[in-house]
Length: 166
Image 1 (spheres, rainbow, N blue to C red):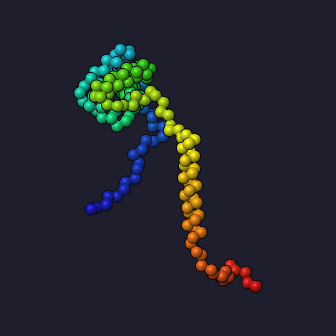
Image 2: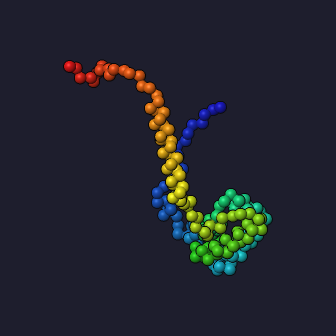
Image 3: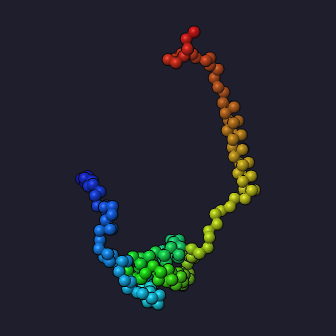
């Protein structure tokens, strides 16, 4: 196998490069393709009604990705592609979420809607007490093992470079 030489990573954007493009050269800087909420909803619903999209959505939902995350990603992609403005995207997001949940329900999968706060596991006082007792017993066991090991009687040896001479 031949080892390829590593090329320097000079393919990164130059600072301020985004300021050098003409105004309106980027999709999000031009007029949106869909200016009303109804047009944007039609756009998303027609894309989401395809069999290919539904299969992909089911796979992503089964992986545990929250519905809110998918919907936000979709609407932000629409903004960056110039499909609609950010405010239209925010208004369409709940409907995208409803469609994703409908797809999840029809596939009979347990999905995370992302709307409920996930409470961190709380540790009860009894659990803390049980853990404390377990740790104390382990420490006592180690202490007993240390005491059982006999240390050989050795006289203190005073030799070496740093020993004070009398």
